[in-house]
Length: 173
Image 1 (tube, rainbow, N blue to C red):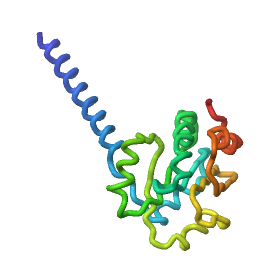
Image 2 (image 1 turned 135 degrees about the horizontal axis):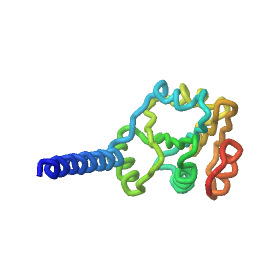
Image 3 (image 1 turned 90 degrees about the horizontal axis):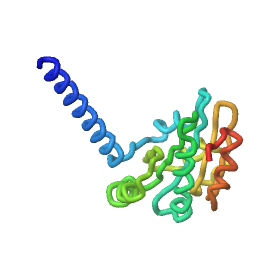
């Protein structure tokens, strides 16, 4: 009898831990994205690892940015399990995070990591991302420890995005 009670106790604890983890995971999806200064974002823009990074600069008020987001989401799914990471850097205004960005993210249920760059003077940080970037969005930086490519354009189709990423890493789909 004592063994049955002990087993039930451990099963109960396991279920509670599982439920708590699922709850925390759910809360994390609905929480405010990380707000970063450029100094905090800079480590996202370099690597010495074998991983490939795809950093997309976008905003909810940018039509072409919103139109290509499903391609970055598909890319995130297709690169799952590989040494690659997609990061969506929102350039939405800090004052619009609660009213525009969060509802947008909740509606879209984005799986890619989203961070918000909160900098007042873009002319200070834009050339640090890429010296030829005019500041237009969408813009995408793809890099690994050996090479970097920068694209100041929107992607009209998933195959266009896949084509520029595939020299860095094979894509599952």
